Image 1 (cartoon, rainbow, N blue to C red):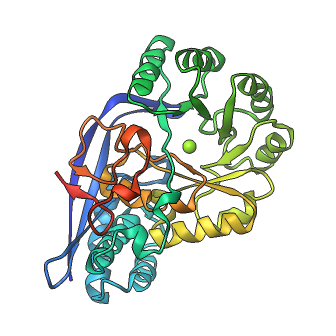
Image 2: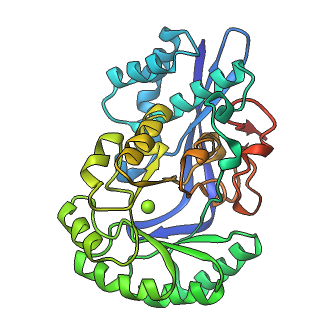
Length: 344
Ligand SMILES: [Mg+2]
């Protein structure tokens, strides 16, 4: 097997602001793993500075990770590839995920099956993704909401965590009276603020609230959970499967992301661990291209909620993936083996 990578930069359609800052483009590292027959598996890393990764850190560790793939030599032994990568680097989850996706894509292509089918999942159990409205001035958020509704997105995720939260949310609700609305505060609120905000969030018909308080404030999360009338999702508080028992008594929904877990096998472990603890499960994403989003889409039958709009937020993506007409992750429309990621 031969493994290579290259770096891309995709501009976002709109500058993307959350409580922690603004991002104008997505740096993506594309990994290719080729078997001796010339079949190529594609994976992607969408590194997140919040978890200590950049395109530069991904590039720094990839040569070592790719040499693990070449050393294992068996495209079907994903377990050994993932274990071998953990022996080479302790952290760097987005870099490891890119390799994990590429090897899964190759294995499913060799079996001539779409990844969900390779996993034995039911494509009819798929979901709609939410579409994220980043923080902006009220007028711009109104326009983005209208555009999202015109494109058919029925579920919106609204980023909050500003002094103007209620104004911003009321603007979005006014522009999308019949949409399902989820809110993500990205750790911005104190526990008391969060509990106060829940009251009006509930009045605007919000479905659930993601990461109201800082991840390190585990007591604060419990305080909010015990007082909130709305379901709570844990994102920054829930990175890998072993985090699930720590949050299980203080949230309703575990939000995994491939770029946090370090691979598709750990992602599935997290899903099953969350279920065993009675939690619902959502899969989110970073600003990512279809080189990685396509793989996450194949987890949809295992999820309760999908927030896989990474490629939808890009102004340009060199890769197409799983079709998402009006936000529906249409696994039944996947007409090729593997993840469906293909360079256009
Ligand atoms: Mg989040």
